[in-house]
Length: 208
Image 1 (cartoon, rainbow, N blue to C red):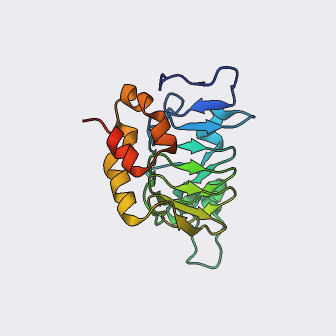
Image 2 (cartoon, rainbow, N blue to C red):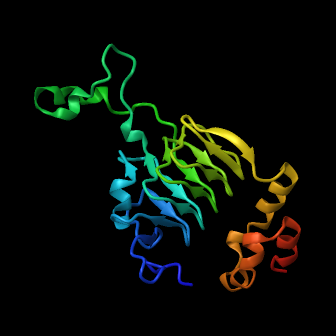
Image 3 (cartoon, one colour):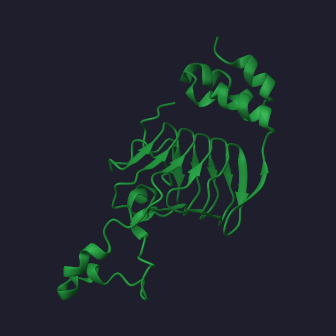
């Protein structure tokens, strides 16, 4: 497997690996994280990462699976809410442009950070500054407004924690194993254990 191939699945142009695709210095994606879209997956930076004017960054870990229509809303979407109107008059230009200071420096929640091995269902939406832990599952159509714990399953609008995939001890062990950082050859040798094994089996397969 080559993490730098844009289309990793022969005959399936709808799937792209994001690391070789992204060009924005404000977006960082780990190896083998992919986006699946039958329309134009190569437009991910402009169609799926919205209102991204900086300085906040979008950071996505390794081995994440992003279903069609997953969107990341960045802090550039923010409007003032401390006055009678939320309308952004200055961006329309003309004589309104002299008031541009009214829309600069709006409060933000910082970077949006996604861990490793996160599965995003169809048309999930992530709001600014959210942190999503490794091993999490984001249900289709969810609107994620709060942080998601490692190995948590969330769903709904706003997304709520449905359950954890493992207990606290197992989650700690999985995070310590960090299989996504294993050498690629070793990882490939143990794919069946990574996909369907127990935590004990994963520990037994870990590099020495």
